[in-house]
Length: 212
Image 1: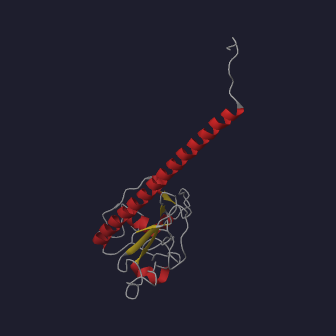
Image 2: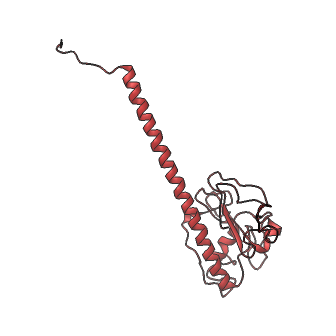
Image 3: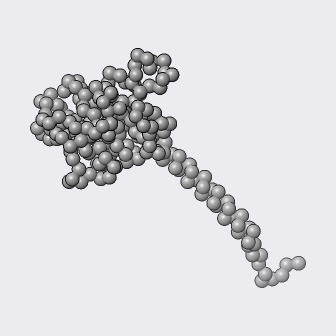
């Protein structure tokens, strides 16, 4: 029998079911979005490393040598003074964007025809991934990965001194080629977790991105 004026209300159980469904859908949406963002970051990281490889190759063709490893404070004509093991890519940034003199209008080598790379200002920072300031050394400005950490760059001449990444002992090429990219250079990002193995296996963690 229908009673006029009486409407059916929502029970507490029904309300909880609706809230639970909304929560599940929200979790799925956030998880999917986060996964897409991380995939995009890894794609951007791999693309930047590829661009760096091409820029370094062109720099070597013009200048006749690879950019120095790591980061430091000295500019030409003083010799680079990277930390040991080499940290970041300050000298790489300097060589590709400004010349090792720190002045693109007065390059160290007259064969320098850079800049060899175009970077968004958000891709540059200090060794800690913070925005650069007036106190940041020119050779300490870093090229940052999508997680705002410096890329690591080491040329082959410095592998022994600054800790180039070695092949694993069970690698069939290890006995004759101790290091990856034995005659060129290594670049890697520590990836999402912003961590990597200690020397001599830096860049080999599962989420690291490298050029070998």
